[in-house]
Length: 246
Length: 394
Image (cartoon, rainbow over all chains, first blue to last red):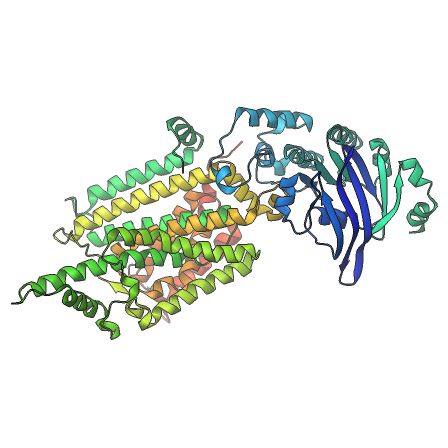
């Protein structure tokens, strides 16, 4: 295990509100990590910083073996560097088919002229079929994504993430609004993905986190409150106060 | 651009039956107009009617371009008529220069001493620019004697303007209504600039006599009208085919993604600004080409042609025809522009209500506005959307 992402001493202020306060987190490769914390703890802002959506006031975000700083890189350049993100609300392209959604995410050259002259290849089609199988949408490839159920949209978005073949997956509340059976399937997908890459999951639901069975980072008021196994952090006095005190 | 071999092209047409339908209908329409035209012999369609139809095809072509940039990529440009006008000006300069040169050389041929080149140049400049009180050829006209160069400008001038404007606007992430306002400002500024007499393009007089094609002056207008009609039909067919191909594959998928959720496309690793710039520039170039075919048929171009309202009409055509489907843009441009020339050209009879007479020249805009509101409210997919109901996709 080597360090893939290193966030150190990062702070962000929105209109005087300190969303992130001297936050430091390290993610290894491969690793499965859950990030939990009460509302407003800065979980989503953390992802915004890593993916280039928000730039921090201070601190460093270092990526990969070559220790590249992600600060100042554009969202698309960060995505091409190998960071994929799944949003809290499922955001798939509803007007397009499941196949088109996956094809767009597939790891290929991203320049306009490369894409213009792109020809559907047999490997590409095979990879899409494989991904569709993985996310349980093998029979739905020609369907419009807008016609999928909520859970299926979440899976499609995870599938699009996997299609990008990122080294780091940032997944924001993947199980929100899912049935118990769907949750189980989602856990399996994430655990399998984490065998070869780094996966960071933001989640509210303790049961879901328990099933992931991984290291947990607890955020509170924009910084790390505790880190370790789920049992370890849930016995932490401060964590109990923060969760029960609200 | 690599030329695809026959197999993928045949597959592309087979996978997009609407493109085949469109090209077939366009071919039939062209054949029908040709047979009925005055230039062909039957003379059931007057030469001016053939010109109107040819011009309508050019408007359909710019509407298709507008549909790609707005309906597919989500950029509501309200400035594409500026590119159309620039294409017209670029070709108009050659048409006017070359024809004036012919007239000047003819009239000086009878002089006892053969005229020098300088005298000929001066005479041409006085002929063209006397109307704005100048007798010098502006630097802008340096290449006006070369058809090749001016044709190059038809592509380069709109293309470069779109490239620079788009680069500045998209990299600053100007989107939505703000971008629309900027494009309106661009076309307004260009139009106001051209209205001035000292800009080298004859101010509000514009360029005229463009229907006379140098080198082909011996041919009757009825024949030339037919030639331009064919050229317009060919341009529309090729343009339609090109854009249908552009939007059919993964590129189309990405730009529709940009239309629906720009930031999501960014997180997939696509550089959204480059895509917008490519689409904006390509459609501007096609608009310029459409303008270069339109104005020789119209005969005259002046700065009023690129007034902001022209580009707004363009958006109205596409909305009424149904955006997000190329044939919708064609239907919208054809129906609305033909209806407009019928109503405003005195074709529609006045309606006498006793106490008030509805004069369609004045009331056409009200009708168009009501039609636009009705389409937006009751048929958000436009006229083209009615076809979707007939051909339900699984």
